Image (cartoon, rainbow, N blue to C red; front, side):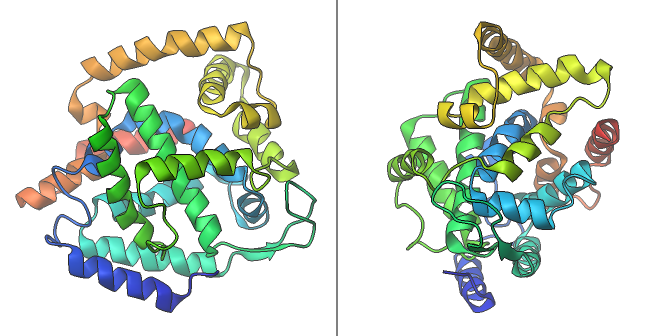
Length: 311
């Protein structure tokens, strides 16, 4: 089923009615979602989340045929997370505007798969506003953020994990996904996610593997050690099925590099000041709620500097 504009508006109206503090947005202080998603270290799971998404042939072929990832990967990253941060940390009006903008962009992303892969056949049609495609992308972001947060920041209790999942439904509403599509509990979600990965719905085809090679290509010899580390870290986060299908090495060297990285990353996170480890969008949200008029100029300068370095 394709999410229409009317479907989206119905969910947005429901979301607006249940939002108590429009200035805080759909979440706000005290939510597990803000605690998890404010952490910059969660971005280390970005490679895993991207590959998990590309492992769905609908997503892979949509990115291959419509995305500017190859010509401007950093720009696409910046635009994508601009929308995500507006939804998660913006006030209610910002979140709704971002939701409408993303839905409008998705209406133009449609086409046909150009290979036989998994259960899909050449010529099968895809649409970016398809409920199942949106659910899969939502699921990869949710699962990766939780796992990286628990690996590098702190373990969550079962109650916190359930609260995070229930809060994530508000984010899903911004894409027009309703409770009839979303698993009811975190345990049900975890079972559905694992079953989906094992199924032939998830399979890394040609465009997905080509994008994996592009994303992990070192631009210069000086970048090779960092890229090799990121490959090993990403491989450690991927399920074995997709680690193999994407062609990651996972020998003794990679397993050791991954294992040794975890305590070092935990220590780095623990000793870093919050101003450096929290996203500027989160800092701005806290300032907005407190009544500050000016944004976090220092944080945004740091983020722009990091993006220029990546370019």
